[in-house]
Length: 349
Image 1 (cartoon, helix red, strand yellow):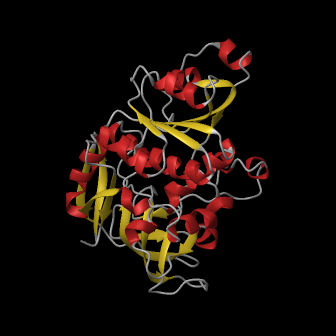
Image 2 (tube, rainbow, N blue to C red):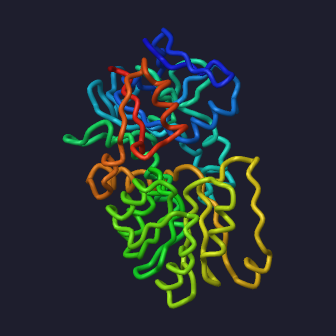
């Protein structure tokens, strides 16, 4: 089969590799669509993990083969698969901090080499503990491009549940890339009033299309004034930091009211440093929340949001690339412009 193999030094090469062999309790999935996620881009751009690896984890496809003992799935089933599933029994699982579980940190899908998601390949091996709890059937009429959003939607839903927006709350969503736009859609569904920021005019226009009340450039001088005008002078009730940029966390504090909750979602690099006034947090009684990766408890809810069309996620797809042109997709995702949002790789093309 063909696969995009990370070879180190920011290089990804499309190569011929063996189709993975499956064992008892496992399934082989023919990958039809896989979204390019910023976390995979960081691993490639900063050489965070040792090569060789095959990345890609927003995976949708068709069951091609089932291992001994698999009863829930048969060849021909259309499925999405999560690449991380927790043990359910450890200290962190008991506290529903699944992303901190040592089993969750193991990657349960591979296209070969060290397991790394594997969706940038024509076939993936889904391991037994993922088959048991981490695979969902795609209903008829739902495209693979739409279905591959289930995992990223889950991660956003986890953050929204932590933040708990209420009807009438003013929510500032900082960053309107694909993830920020999903957050905007979700906050609007909760009945919140959203003010969005992004440096790209096209993304601000998308935010308005998906229900934001205002959409501003993050460096626009009137941003804080707009937020205060929407809140009787107080500041945002909730803030979602859906992008990583110098000063963005400081901006989230500055635009929020005393007692606000601020969700850090995109701050995944240990090189990123934040400096805020201790008094703004302590005396201002603000809460800084972190949310990372998906939640198994929200798996079916996130799938329903995508499959039902309640979230118009397929409208976020602007570019689709065959596997042989994945380098073009990676380059566009690393350097987005006014016309690019979600990039999807279609390995069978």
